[in-house]
Length: 165
Image (tube, rainbow, N blue to C red; front, top):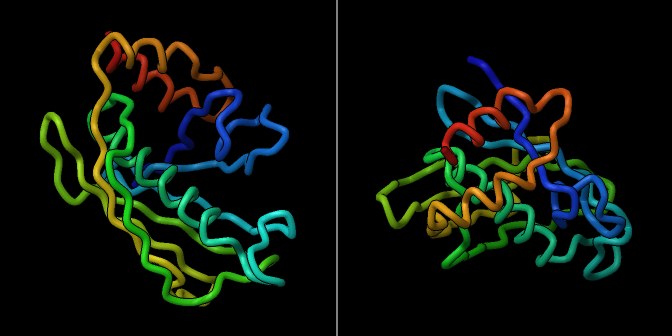
């Protein structure tokens, strides 16, 4: 089972390394299963209620993992058409979580995904479902051109660039 780090763009709110307000997350894909995972430790700046992570931050991280699962499946960037999140338990500031996403079904114009956020004990904090639409070829090439060349993401960046040709 080969797990590879996914590429990123400079300014992305979730994975962009140059966004001063971003989360700077590193997402990884299991080459065999297509499951996307990342770890995330919410900071005090991600607060909703005192000590509790804002639900919008959790939805954002789920969306990022699920869009990458959809994008990786066809090597074509996708955009979210619909996202539904169910919050099961409170995510607490400073406590690490794991985000996982996978493809449920894939058709040429619509990819459906599931996502989950787990605490360090494996308890479910949130679940999500979403529908993603692959971008047209020209727009995909534009997005692929913005990927940052970086050690550790060569394999996935090359695969995404190959899919844009």
